[in-house]
Length: 414
Image 1 (cartoon, rainbow, N blue to C red):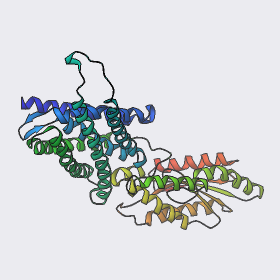
Image 2 (image 1 turned 90 degrees about the horizontal axis):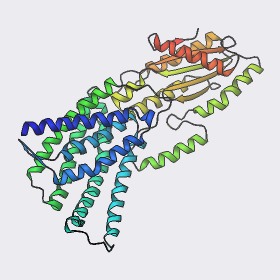
Image 3 (image 1 turned 30 degrees about the vertical axis):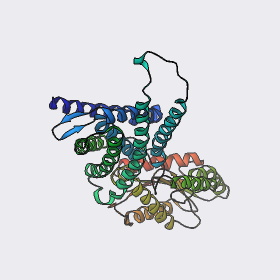
Image 4 (image 1 turned 180 degrees about the vertical axis):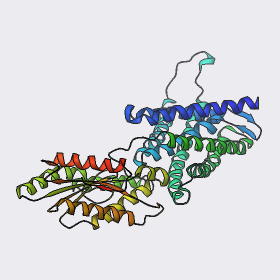
C-alpha cells in the first residue's frame, strides 16, 4: 500500500508539472490567463485535501493536497517569476487572496437566507463551509508571504548559487515550505484537529516534493528555451507594494522619452527622432551612422543569475557605452538587451572605430556576480548603406545578427 501511495504521488507530481508548464510555456500564443485560471482553480482542491485527505507513508501521514498541489503552486509562482517578472507574478497572488476573502464574505451574507428545507441528506453543511472558508483565506495569506519570500530568497542566493540552479531553487523552496508547513498546520490543528504526525510527515514529504520540482524546473529551463523578446519588463526591487510606485515612475519616464531601467532615450524616441535626424544630416550633406548593439547571451544571464542581476548588467552597460560616445551622438534602448546609437559627421572608418570602442568598453567593465559581458555590433553608414533611415536600420540590424552568428563579441561594418 505504501509503495502504491508513493507511485501515485509521483504520478500526481508529473501530471501537475507537465500540464502547468505546458500552459506557461505557450502563454505567448494562448495568453497567460489560461495558466492563471488553472492555478486558481486548484486552490479549493488543495485546501480540501490538505484538511481532510491523508495517506500513510513510512515517516508519517501526509496530504497530497499540501505536498503535491500546494508545493507545486508555489514552484509555479517561482517559475512564473523566472520567466516573466514581479509585475506578472503578483497578479495570481492578489487574485487568490481577494477571491477567497470575497468567498468568506459572501458565505457570511448567504447564511442569513431563509433556506428551503430539503431531505436530510441534502441539507447544506455550513460548519464545513466555514472551515473551508477559514482555511482557504489563511492558506492564501500564507501563500502571499511565501511568494514574496521565495522570490526574494531566489534573488538573494543568486550571487552564491548562480551556477547551481537546482540547488538554488531547492534551498529557497525548502526554507519557504518549512515556514508554510508550520503556519498552515497550526490552522489545521486548530480547525480540524489534525494530529501532530502530519506536521513532521508533511514537512518531510514537502522537502522531497521540493527536490523533485527543483529538478523538473531546472530541466524545463534548460531544455525548453524561449526566443528572446523585443521588450523585457523590470524585476522585483522590493516587496510587491513598491511596484505600484515604480509603475508610476515608469509612466512618467515614458512621457519624457526615457527608458525606465537604464535612463537613456527609449524606443519611442528613436522612432520619432531617428528619421528626423537622418533627414537633417542628408539635407546638410553630412554623413550619418547607425550603430546597432546587442548584449551576447543576455537570456542566459537572466536565467542563471536572476532578473535583478540582469537589470544591473543592462544599467551598467548603458552607462559605460553612453560614457564612450560623443556629446553630439544620440543613444537609445531599442528593446530588451538591444541599444541603438545615431552619429552624425563620422566616416565609415570613424563609426566602426566608435563601435569598436563601445565593444571594448563593455568587455572591460567589471560586473557584480557575472564573470563577463560582451556585445555584438552592426554598423551602417550614409551614404553607402541606405537612402533612408529604415534602410540604414535594416542594414545595421543584418550586420548585427551576422556578428552574432559568426562568433559574437565583434563589430561588423561592411
